[in-house]
Image 1 (cartoon, rainbow, N blue to C red):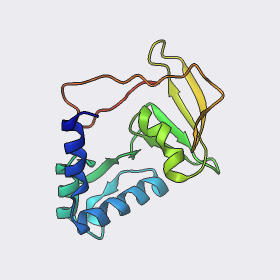
Image 2 (cartoon, helix red, strand yellow):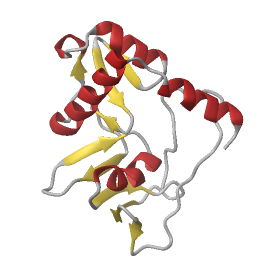
Image 3 (cartoon, rainbow, N blue to C red):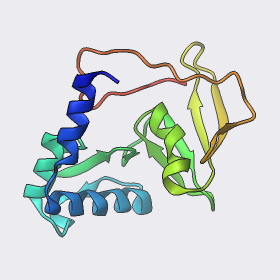
Image 4 (tube, helix red, strand yellow):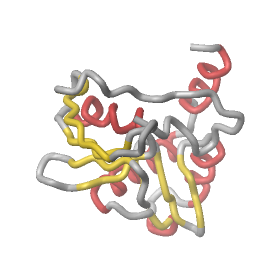
Length: 153
């Protein structure tokens, strides 16, 4: 990993207790509700969310947290189907592949091919993808990384 990338993540890790609490609540709500989270409904309040937004840990629009990595409250090209059939949008391909390790259980990922745009389904366990050796994540360097990440599988 390059030093700039690592420094950015180290800076993000230094969020205060209120922001950390807000992030946990936001992540839980995006997972349980599948919708943007109104800032006014959060226990930690607007200052904590502003700190998260400043460090690019959440994306805020119109008074709502629209995404908090890895979850999105609005449609993206990446859908994870959780055990029990709940569908949740995730921010990018890498997030989709990491959800099973984060939750400790397998999920189904629905996405599109970066090369041909064909839609496909992939089972991913906490140990990694199952049954399709031809799947790759397309990752590239971008000038403006805010709110952007790997957008193709």
